Length: 130
Image (cartoon, rainbow, N blue to C red; front, top):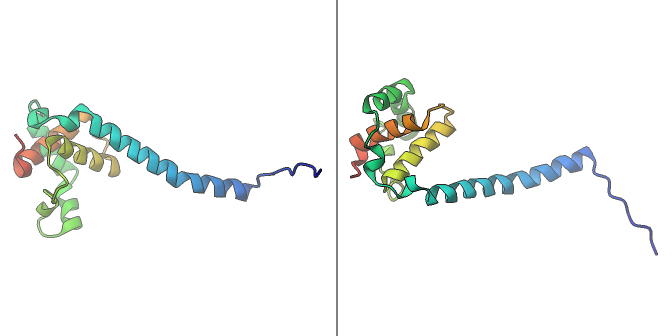
């Protein structure tokens, strides 16, 4: 009988192992977060989520964070074609979620009520969910 072969993990092997696991883990976390959000009440709610939103605050935050300028760089023109992409945003909850995604991706540091305020302004000006 042969002696059991001992496996020693070198730093290169460990790094490769971590790299191979990073993508599936990140993907699983992303899908888990998306599934949790889709099951959340915010996704299911209509425009009543904007009922108590501070519109003036939302307008101020849009100007302060240069949202229009960013959208213009992304899609050209006046930037408004970024709104209502076919089939993507069809509920107030999805709109709020998209603003939250911008908040996270751009590292804006907005509080939940600020995200709602920005989404309420976008709803008022572009989507008009009832």
